Image (cartoon, rainbow, N blue to C red; front, top):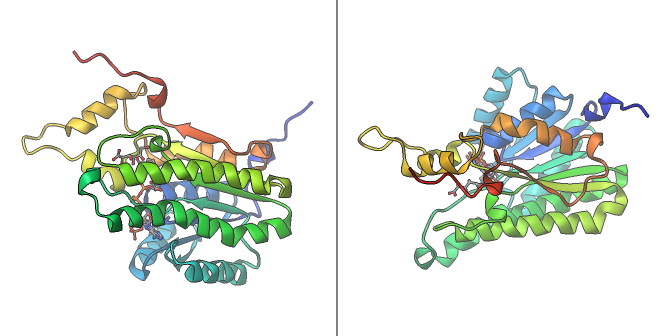
Length: 269
Ligand code: NAP
Ligand code: GCO
C-alpha cells in the first residue's frame, strides 16, 4: 500500500479565510497559498482589507480581499457571490478565523459586550458556513476549519463571553460534521494555545520596570514547549485539515498548543 504525498496539496482549490488581513488568519492563508490554493479573505473595512492586500503582495501571494462583516448575513452572501464571480467557483475551503475577545470580569460585562463577542465568534462562523455549504454540496466536497481555542475547554477570569463562544464553536464544528458529512464535507477545528498576535499583545506587554508581564511568564511556565506559539505553528495542521489527506477526519478539534492542555504546570520556584 503506497501513500500519495499529493494528498497534502491544495492545488486547484479556492480557500476563504475570514478576518485574515494579519495574525493567525494571514498565517494560515499564506500556508494555503504555498500548498497551491487560491486565496480569498475578508475584513470589516476597506482600510483593513487594503492593509491585508499589501501584506499578501509583499509575501508574493495573489490574494483577493473583500469587505464583509461576518455577522452581516447579507454582506456574507454577497461575499460568496463575489468570490464565485471572481474565482469562477465557490470556496472549496473555509476557515472561520475572524474573532474578537473582550477581557472584562463577568459582573462588569454589559449584555451588549457579551452579545458582540458571541455574535462575531460564534454566530459569524454559523453565517459564513451556512453561505458556503450549498456550494460544497454541489461540488461533492468541502473543508471547513473553525478556529476554536483552549477556551473551548478551559475557562479563566475575564473571558466568559469568549469561552462561551469558543465552547459553542466546538459544538457547531461537531454539528456541521454530523449534518453534512454525508456530502463529503469535513468540518474540523484548530484550537490554538497562546499565540503571539495583536489579540494577545496586551498579555505580553513589558511592565513599567521592563520586566515581563506576569501573564507572559505564567503561560511560558504552563506550556511544556516553554514558549508562546506563532501563527507559523498553525500552518501545517491547517494545511492537513484543508487537504485530501484528512478526508476521513471529521468533527475533530486539533489542539495546537505546545502541550499546555496536557500539563499541570511547573511548580513555582
Ligand atoms: P487578531 O489578531 O485580533 O485578528 C482577528 C481578525 O479578525 C482581524 O483581522 C479582525 O479585523 C478580524 N475581525 C474581527 N471582527 C470581524 C468581523 N466582524 N468580521 C470580519 N473580520 C473580523 O486575532 P488572532 O490572534 O489572529 O486570532 C484569530 C482567531 O484565532 C480568532 O478567532 C481568535 O479567537 C483565535 N485564537 C487566537 C489565539 C491567540 O492566542 N492569538 C488563540 C486561540 C484562538 P480588524 O483588525 O479589522 O478588527
Ligand atoms: C486570553 C487569551 C486566550 C487566547 C486563546 C487561547 O485572554 O486568555 O486571549 O483567550 O486568545 O484563545 O487559546
